[in-house]
Length: 301
Image 1 (tube, rainbow, N blue to C red):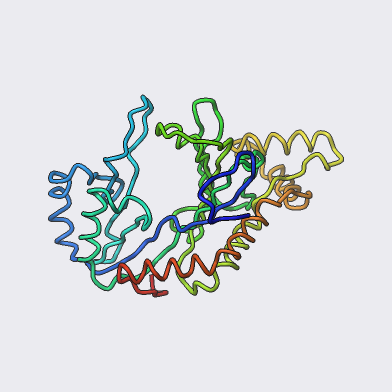
Image 2 (tube, one colour; image 1 turned 120 degrees about the horizontal axis):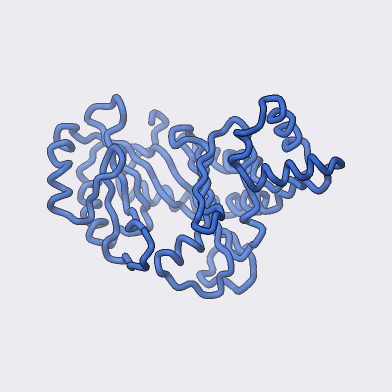
């Protein structure tokens, strides 16, 4: 599947993989950050309080569509727990840096010393593949957070916690873009899968991606001999919250069925293959970004 063509051919499934976000940790006086915490918000409308820290948003591309849509985040920063005089910065190196908030962010990044690469988020954009919406991560024991749209359709699923080291985000990018008032041509469906990879040896990323996608599939419940089991598996696939209503013994039974039943995983295989095919480009791009922002590779963070 080509990845260098900017135009999406109508009805032709296509996968594109890209670097979505980087997280860096560097030296920045905690007292200085706290002194500027409210000052930055007063002086700049693109700096907003968010969670335990601050976010920088793009104020130039916002379109009021009547929906409750937040402005697009350029970066997020916070003081890491139990790490005095450190600052954690999460940003997209390929988006928003030309905006007023992005230019301000570049100045801040330049002031952060001893920056270390902590985490990379890689995005798989899946275009015009209608079955993509049926795929899920079926890895039991991993937490899930599901967000539904107004029509009770799944819009976003988070698998794992942000601090787990391998969080996965799956969401309907087409709905997100339309909600923001963006016009899309020749795109019938658009799902995005984001894989969070902690630092370590970048050479290990292809193996990690393959491992993370091993549980991304559609259970072929129709192959089960028992009609009642077919019906139950179908319900569990489509009502993710129903798992919590099962008795422990029943839950254990169906976890076993999900693991053993045949499944469709061609999309996961295609994604892993595309990552391997594009790995040299991604690795060079990552190194270029780290050089540009004077970021060091370090396994400590």
